[in-house]
Image (tube, rainbow, N blue to C red; front, side):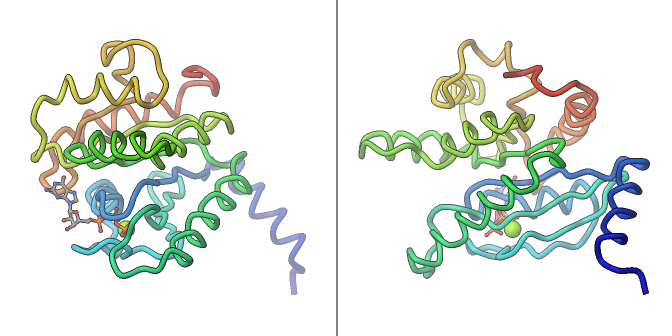
Length: 211
Ligand SMILES: Nc1nc2c(ncn2[C@@H]2O[C@H](COP(=O)(O)OP(=O)(O)OP(=O)(O)O)[C@@H](O)[C@H]2O)c(=O)[nH]1
Ligand SMILES: [Mg+2]
């Protein structure tokens, strides 16, 4: 029988050779992470109308990489604060422990409500959870794409994205961040070809390009 350290060694070598590293999908609950993964990969991950559908990181194989569907963070109706905090801590630990192997993070936000929610948190004097996660990923040096989802429900796409860029602590406008902020509709498949192109482009870039 192969003992654990050896099999882990072999697994890591295989990953090195065929490049099976990770792309993680993170974001608040119910923003459409699992729907987006389904549309991208055709793999049947659990999706749903209510927040809190994905409760543990789910692994899906795609183009020689591992896509990880993460549970959502933030408010989930019917989920006690204690459980919500535990899920958030687990996500943070997962990202910290795997930072080296994470090639790309896709932070999915709900384009219709994100700005309003961010402003609500700011008024309460709190750091909005999406902003906190974006900056956390940057600190770990993990290349990040913000998938601005539910485009079908959005008005004023350009001005919303420009405002989001500022809220995320970046300088400049959408023109400067065309391969960071991508408006899409996972449900209706809008702009997914462009989204895939940007993923491939960002995966080819050396780390640190957008920091
Ligand atoms: N209008 C609209 N609805 C969408 C879009 N993408 C996803 N949804 C809907 O959003 C709801 C939540 O989708 P999920 O993919 O389960 O969301 P999730 O982010 O994985 O949620 P958790 O697993 O709870 O964190 C579903 O009802 C989807 O049909 C979109 O582009 N437009
Ligand atoms: Mg999900």
